[in-house]
Length: 245
Image 1 (cartoon, rainbow, N blue to C red):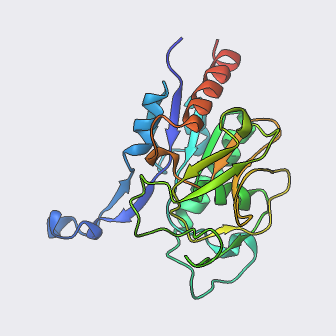
Image 2: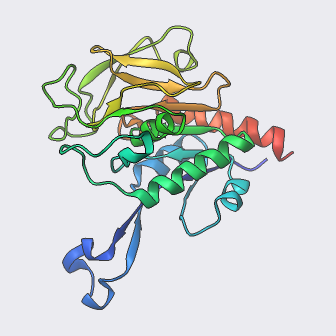
């Protein structure tokens, strides 16, 4: 059997963001942005990474996938969890919100395993009816938005919940990076908290059926391949056996 195909979401930005690296004649175009550490980690874990575009039909896309990575990025639109934007809210990308929520729903319906990373965890939580704190300061709790620290360096500890699926792939205590200024407030219905920071902030979520695993940190920037990518590829292989044999 071929290696499992793992879809990876990304961002879409105006080409003008590229500044002097782009001819002015192309400034009105758009480009899709995919950080290379995500596919690199998928490949190291044994999967075939595929960077996804939102131009394809969501159901057609999911039909080809054996696994899905919901990646980090912009803040979620607060209207998704029935709140109004606060002054501290960062840039939002509503088109991406809509696309990824549809991908999540499509993958969920077909049983495709899903790994959520940073924003991906927050999107999973909101899609399940949860809410977010729109901003936390560096001085709050464990010190979450470590923007000025190299993302490949751990900045605080996370404690994995005993008995969770995450506890089967991670030790009870792990050191993680922290590149987020939003955190889970109310946990979505049907989700299980699988890890917390020392200040109680949710750092891991999963579903009881083992289809979704989501982490608040960026495992693709830590020594690779991280256990979460191994989990995804193993789960994707099991999906292949069941659905593509």
